[in-house]
Image (cartoon, rainbow, N blue to C red; front, side):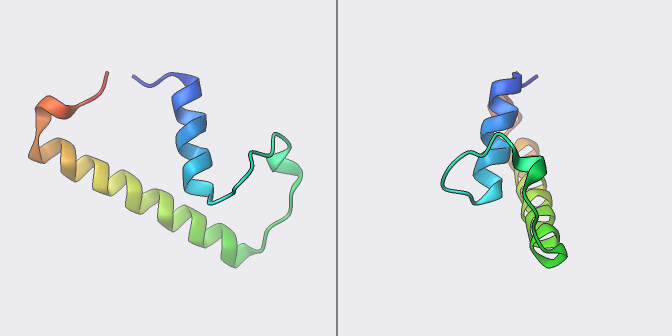
Length: 61
C-alpha cells in the first residue's frame, strides 16, 4: 500500500509539470492534454503491472 505522499509524488511525475501547483483543480487544460495525461498514466500503471508479474519479489507494500 502506498502512502498518500507517494501517490501525490507519482501523480506529479506523471503530470509533466515542473512545479507542483496545489490548486491543480483550478487550472484549465485542454481536453486533448487531459487525454494525453490519462494515457500516460494508464501506460505507467500497465508497465508497473507487467514488471510485478515478471518479478513478484519487487512488489512494494
